Image (tube, rainbow, N blue to C red):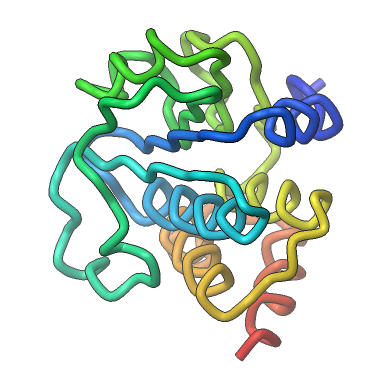
Length: 185
């Protein structure tokens, strides 16, 4: 089975949390940043207090992503839920690991098969072409409307992680998601 965890449980955990920190991995790439930003922006639309964390500097070519100015290097506040995006191990969180150690609950959302689990809850799909594919499905299942900013971040993540749809991990779902994201404008 390639799906670890469930969307239903993940949604229940998110809905029960008022304050949420979302962190990608050190040396962020497009999948990490795009997935982090799209989930953060989506959860803010539901009234959650969301801290989007990137301890490392954002590469220049991602500085125009919607919401990038909301990124913080850390979060000193204890949160109800800490979400790791695109992190196959605790080590990849860098100094953000301190946020996870103090959080009420922890969750990983990822697509990497080879990983060292470090969170209490997981939403992992090895068949997904990218973490953004899982985040897209989560946003849809939560019935949060996609807007241009969320779609731009998801599409960036999807394109980067599939190397412009050239990698063997690219699946038909990636193209279907891409088509819907493009319809947002």
